Image 1 (tube, each protein chain N blue to C red):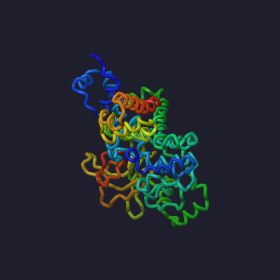
Image 2 (image 1 turned 90 degrees about the vertical axis):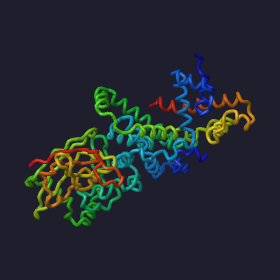
Image 3 (image 1 turned 135 degrees about the vertical axis):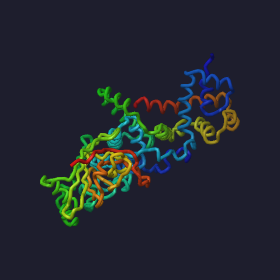
Image 4 (image 1 turned 60 degrees about the vertical axis):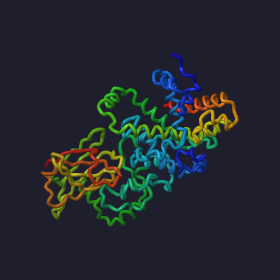
Length: 268
Length: 191
């Protein structure tokens, strides 16, 4: 069988009709089909209107710490410190402390905690190195923020958690973490969660889930690699022993995305 | 020229300001193209953390190599896509000694994302790479392809419209398409 000449292949790639014989040969001949495929790819790429609005939705943005790593590695100015992908991904307070309750420090560059060995945010502790700013931030935060409470609890091993869980990675994730339930003076229970890195494509949400996965309670959004969440009074942890951190897309759907990053079961 | 814009929001002035060292141009490039960079890396490497690392590496390289970027010859989006494919290749090479681990990961955890995602990201990358390439074909090749692409004219209609011999039109189409094809392949060969 005679192969299609290059000009015919080009015209076919442009969508011209060259008759049944050419079409039949193209279907039957792997060599010609390969050449055609390459030309067709160029036509599709160069021709307008074949993919109008090329599904930005199909693209997945990088994690919220990537820009901080770039910013730090290149020593860029504070003017461009904010994640260009927008604040909606890194809902404040990004790094004021490991809790969601602490107000953000009034500094331009949030301190990206070491996500893992790969990121190396060299200037990560920048705001810590500026005592004036740090003191101002501390004063503004009225000293007794939940973040400081957390720090105190972290450094005071005397606090015995009611229950705790080792968090193991789920599916293709590799993050690990710990969760524990503490009781504060007034009987309020708090779930503290800490992961070694934020692997969420969207944002992290913390859940308590029944053993058979049939029921679940959302405790809130975790914007960094640690968070502290009030456990609703009356919630029986024995009925909701599974701590789950999910990866939630920004789609406005309040349900669990069914993409879990880490999971563990509370035990006292 | 408007129909060729792969990314309408990309202001050509940003090519100049990027080349001149304006950090806000880098931030704007990141805003517009980091999702594509990340998606290309993610689909190729199948590892979210590695894709984040590649994304970071790409924009660091983009900035550090800006003196090699000539806004008169290339557009920043195509420059970024080219660097992305190189960085992905480097990431694969770096993990080559871990081939067994990678193969095991691939076999045990096939990417559950729909294949359309890959198609869309790759198609968008192709489109960005060819953005502006028709202008570089010269004449009459550029006009011939624009009539074929924009106006959907057949080669014989183009021949009549431009008053060129049929064989000349066909020959120009063949060479021009081959050139566009190799633009994609050269880029891919580096990745």
